[in-house]
Figure 1 (cartoon, rainbow, N blue to C red):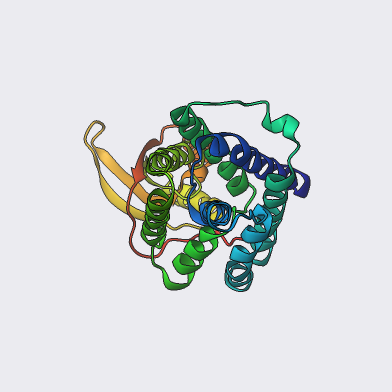
Figure 2: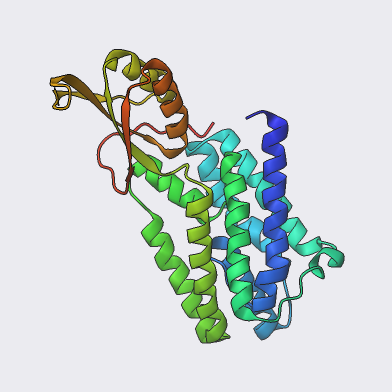
Length: 285
């Protein structure tokens, strides 16, 4: 991805995130997950208990300081720089976005705020992921744990988000905390539909040109394949089936390439829900 396109996606994602916080999230008194939700909770505590509202951007920057350093050292330098750019832009815009843009949306129904806010949040996150960045916070932590220790940290992130909503519900408004669950669920479902970069697909390819097809898979994706020899009972002839697991965004390009090599190839694509063993993941930078 060339730099201008990546920069445009980063800015668009950050602007949408700030706009969402100032409209749907604010209108429904919702608590998003991660450090963004924690920042809003700290602001609300300051308002209720101490009569002061610290700037959103200041709290967000402090919370992200240590995770950003860890990400820069262990995940990827440019990935971290792009993500920090998003944190800075979205944080400052949340504090200083012109009222004109905020007044474009006046929603007085909490359920509508939760649903459409979740969808807009999913859209903003998908733009950031396509640009090779993230909104920071718990994403830094989860990616670091996954890549360094090969463990799935999302369950712990989920537990943290649940604890965050429990505290918000206990201190302030239980209804808003429960609606926030709808917001987070909508975000998750929307993100699964909009961005498939972290999904894997299994390919079963029956072809008469197995070596050429394997070379294509290796060169295009850096993934390997396993071949099985069998008999095609329709024509009573020997057939070779290649088995390979690749990332979801690579599938369509591979299918087009396989069809150019062997127009008669039979390709079966299956979604992979769980995968054990070594699986190549492209570097963040």
